[in-house]
Amino acid sequence: MIEKIMASLESLPTEDLIEVRKNLDQLIRSKYDNDLGKRKGQRAKVKIAGNLEIEREKEFFYKLHKIIIQEMSINGLVFFVKGTVIDGDVLRVSFRVPSTGEKKIIDCQAVRVKEIKPGTIPEYEVAAVAVSKEAVKNYRDMLRKRGL
Image 1 (tube, rainbow, N blue to C red):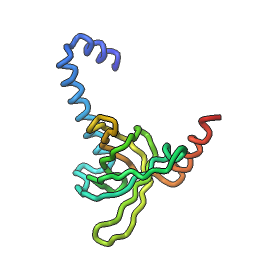
Image 2: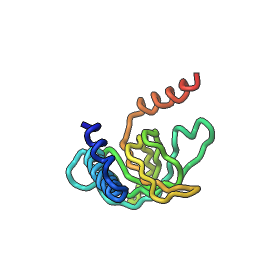
Image 3: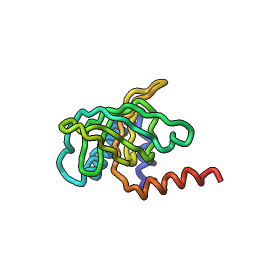
Image 4: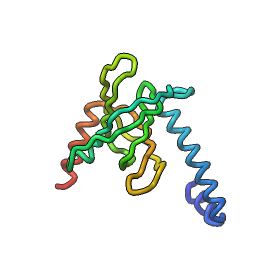
């Protein structure tokens, strides 16, 4: 089926391909949004500052990236970060609950990464779903063993 779709797309002009790409991006985003929260409605819109650790980077250096959390659900969140995040990265997000000041730390995995501002320090919109401690441990083991 994909071969048929690709064959039909090859004959389209560039402008039409760009329009198809925008529509596909929007469709994929809505599908991920529905899967991320496992509910039909929108996730809670928030604006919370926090920090992000990327497990992949911890192998070489320790750096906290500043983030702005835009949306939250029971098992995921959407945030903006100035730093390179790759689809599938395991992340540790920390922030303070605005009402109580309690510090929260969430281990999550990037499921959708979209570049908002390109440049030397790009800005990304990242949708991430919460993962277990076991998944984080498996990811760390995979990073350790990949060089062998």
